[in-house]
Length: 170
Image 1 (cartoon, rainbow, N blue to C red):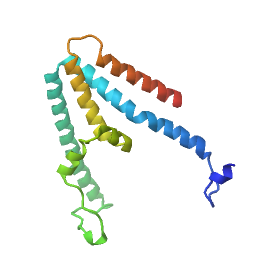
Image 2: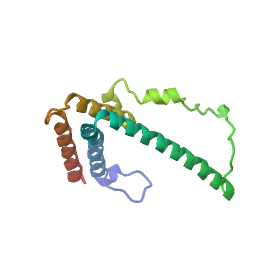
Image 3: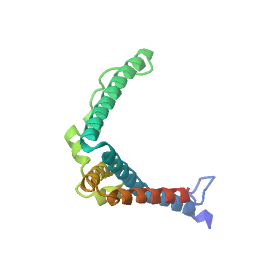
């Protein structure tokens, strides 16, 4: 019964089968939902604004947010250092403890472009899937420009279907 699924020594035990089933159903919808929402909104935005204006606006917003978050990091670290709760300075690097070195910027950027999008989705890598969805939506808008329906409506219907599934699961 239920005791067979409980960990020895744990006082409370939830039903693992129903909890795992519910969590797996939510995970099942996560990647398709993110893909469809990002792709459909990109496609719709590019169709409304035009491709040149969207790229320009996106780049301005990305670099503005990068600058603001960097400035906030510097200011917040100075404020925290002033409180005395944390030490401020460069931490010594100790590779003798066997800690792996942090990946470089080239590795991080290369990791955003997977060679297999299905494998990336299977691993739950949201950043590569979101980037692929952004590119997919942009090119879907480009190829269906001036045509009614098509890929944009299909992506919107897919997104609506995924939201209905999530609503049902919750």
